[in-house]
Length: 568
Image 1 (tube, rainbow, N blue to C red):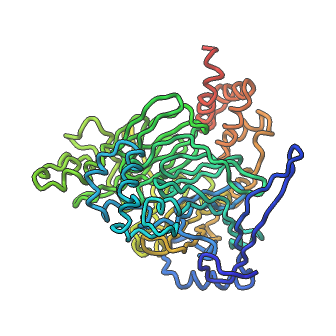
Image 2: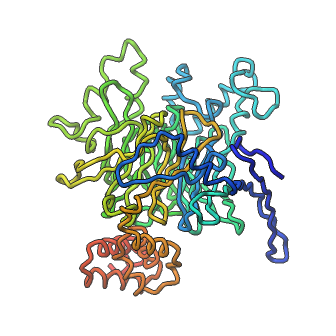
Image 3: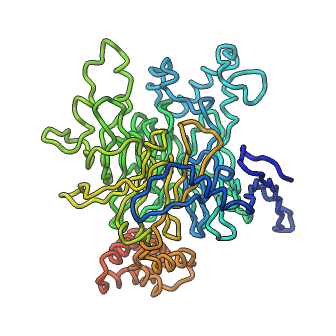
């Protein structure tokens, strides 16, 4: 049966797959999966035509090809690559109907600033969009078709996660599977954070960070909240949860923009940051939760370098005369931003002469009269940062080792390049060493290195609003510049290794491998081994002359602190 799905450009096949399995003599029905398959006949020709009509500008030594078109990719927000090369994206159907932007509702501003929790926001939305006020809210679409324009219409649109695959390994994606659909309370935000791991997945969508499991048919299911209380305010759109990654310490890290958070962790500790963005971390089950860094506006994504330094770029406050900030974040740091600096007192003509963020120069690098309570930025940087990556070690070619990659998103593909840059030490922090515009002509929302060493780019195509379009591009070095070809092939193989089945000796040897993804996998598996793993880490510290192997041994021992603490 050939039908059109999500207004795709080619005829697609919608396959509804229902699988059954038996457990304890009881038949269990797996959920239906929506699968979209490309017409293979003219795939390369169509992809080449799209590329030819895209105004791409590339740095020397790089090449690009379309990996997935807008018949498979819809409004990509967050992006995660799996070890087998599959690409997962979160996609949203939300627009102005359920993702409100305070700039379009300035009469809500004063009340929104007063919110202290997500329940305050829920109460406000239920009152503002009560059934009794339906007539005055007819701009809100009646999505549930009950004849009223009320808060129940905010609980209709759902977030989606799609798995994009190249099933025949010809370099072009030909299959897209919706593996999850859900999260649709009246206070649900956009799913801006996604992390795919071997045995579980994480989705960040205010007000929660969710952990999900895989079913045998590949669907994600049984979401469990490991942290609740994100997205306190109605603020700027796109300031929700993001930046979901696995840290070198084995913890999960994620962030929220300045729509804020008011959290109570599993141990009962309260963390109240309603007027600022934060980066947090916890164990995968939500335990040992802590605020890692605060005072941020909207970082979107952040990355660790090979030494565990956390680097990001934070959006500016939209004040004339300032710009975004390249930031080195350390545990417990405060970068100085509060949503109060964005609006609030500045809308009151009797109380707007002193603008803290600007007048105290909180947005600039270290200067003589710098406020002592904040960690200043490395430098002022590029507009609208969204996606960010650090070369794990065998990505692209030797020219790009130890480089960071940053997306500049301003709603226009011509003005939204991807930058490559590197840093060099300066005191206890860093300064910019070099930077280069490596790609323009598309509108990236996210970038991720694949297991093959190429850089995959989610493309919003154009504008700001969701429109059921999207693409994924594959950026790589040219054949002449592929001077890490052998290492990339080996890394690709090692990404699929079952590390939990390897012995301590094999895992120890991989702590010195040149790709940090492999080193980290070996470290994590050693940390699970208990005493044999601890002995292996200590042996590396005592006998290895490889700096990075020693660093991973230290991180690994840190993961085992609960096991070894009785010894001290």
